[in-house]
Image (cartoon, rainbow, N blue to C red):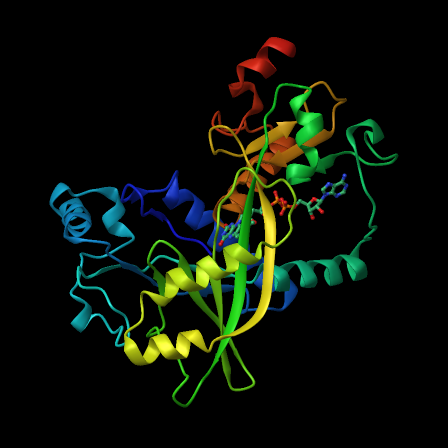
Amino acid sequence: MFNPVSFRRIVEVWNAGQHLTEMRATLSDMEETLGLQGELLHDVPVAKVFANGEYRDTWDARWAEGHGVCQWASLGEDIAGAQLPHVQGPAGVGKVHAAGWVDVPALLQAMEAHFEVHHNVEHQTWNVDDGLPSGADALVDCRGVGAADELSEVGVQIHPNHGDVLTLSTPLEGPHALDSGGHTINNGKWLLPTHQHAGRQHWRLGATYAWHKTKASPDGHAADELRKHMSKVWDGASREAWGNAQLEKHEAGLRPASPDRRPMVGPWPGQPKGVLMLNGLGTRGVLVGPSAALALVRWWMDGVPIPEEMDLSRFKAVRERFQD
Ligand SMILES: Cc1cc2nc3c(=O)[nH]c(=O)nc-3n(C[C@H](O)[C@H](O)[C@H](O)COP(=O)(O)OP(=O)(O)OC[C@H]3O[C@@H](n4cnc5c(N)ncnc54)[C@H](O)[C@@H]3O)c2cc1C
């Protein structure tokens, strides 16, 4: 999912405009190259269900302030007119039109097939000691939390943040059908309508955040909590439909979070020329990944300086160890 609005503080997320533009351009190029036009990036507005009147006042005040966040969202609305017939929201809702989701599994599958035909794909592990493979000009380490131990030895911190996400399905017709009016619903957790398949609507429900879990295994308790939390959003009949939603999949992963929540892009500290890295995408790989990759490529190919916020030399521990 991508969403340029932080609901905690009702502000734009970091560099929202640039990252949205670069994400869209990158995915549009990839859709074309891979023959998947219109299949990877899906625009789906978010309906943020306000927790209370105070939150709505803060939301609406952004328009009086002329705040940048207003370009991605709209003024609060009462639930009655918001095309969310089965959602409960006494304090109203605010919509973010510039949000949606990217079919990352389809993208990875198509890229792998493309590289198998046009280039070469090998599956193998890599660690820093392996260095630059023979014949390669560059290697980009994108191991996420898999690189955490080695990075900590050179002063770069990657903190694993565990998360669970569920895939559920409901029938498209009948008393157990569920309708979000084409919106992703956010009531603190997310419910995103994705594909329709074999007479059923598929949904992604997420996510949890835990710092103390270091293995990417699904947590049954977290799944119950997610379902329970989202049941509060539905009115009577739809709550019953929600209770009958079928669990299709329960997945979990470790988000590679950096201390300042910005990516880490550039040369691998202390390694030979050509050993590069892209890490620290944290909770926002979809929105930030394309810009981070562009920054890396522009620097490597054209000598364009890496933006300071992504450059590893912003970390004192790295500067102290690897002064030029
Ligand atoms: C539950 C959950 C929900 C999320 N929802 C969203 C969302 O809606 N939108 C969003 O933008 N982001 C979301 N994220 C965050 C997103 O998943 C990350 O930002 C993204 O996956 C980071 O991408 P990455 O490629 O840098 O790292 P990863 O996705 O972690 O990939 C690292 C890869 O490196 C491999 N690897 C590790 N060690 C080695 C080694 N030694 N040799 C070879 N390979 C190795 C791993 O197997 C893995 O395939 C979510 C994360 C979780 C856990």
